[in-house]
Length: 268
Image (cartoon, rainbow, N blue to C red; front, side):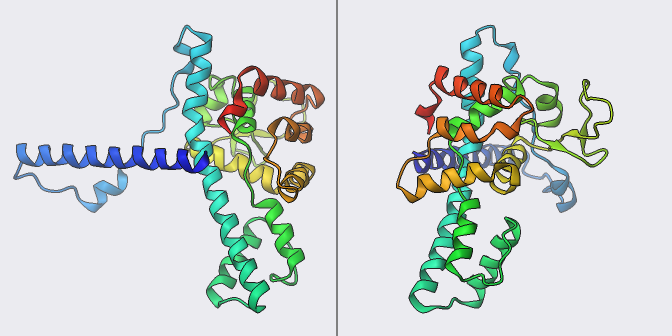
């Protein structure tokens, strides 16, 4: 399913590229003497990162579907990247089991993974170290991600989502790192983190679940599913996200209800 969606994304990108080249050719035919854009001008061109106006659709059901459809490609892409990293780690692990050593290049790649995901070890090539790393380098079900996104961003209509591209309500604790909540309690210092793009927000969400000590039980439960050959169960994994919100158990109920009522497991 994931590979199919990745193929769809790639096909979309290829179509877009073909369209761009086609338009470019037409422009050259009309203005054959125009000077090409300078490198300085090209470097200043940035992608448009405007969140769709989901609230403008009068149909509640269509608003929900458009939100899920829009965000799903980002989630699938982030999961595909994690899967690629996981396969790279498993490949190196297999080489170690066969020969007891790896190339210098693979050793550097592996060390980068340990550093990125905060896995402390004295022996990068031990099975115990590989097991700890693989607990952190893994996917999050699409259904669970979309349910949290809908809950945390008010279906893409919250101030934090529209202004800060923050789809998952993630906090930060350095002054000026984001937006100050209007109802922040006295003495609290957190802000709601700002991002430049939706893709950055999605990547940060995955990194948060995969590295924060608050979600260690979530990762262990996911690892147990992997070890026993089970598909990742978003409904069950939601039980381990009570630390994600101050609402605790009520938050878990909300996420599970969103998954169930919107048939989100069909997107996994």
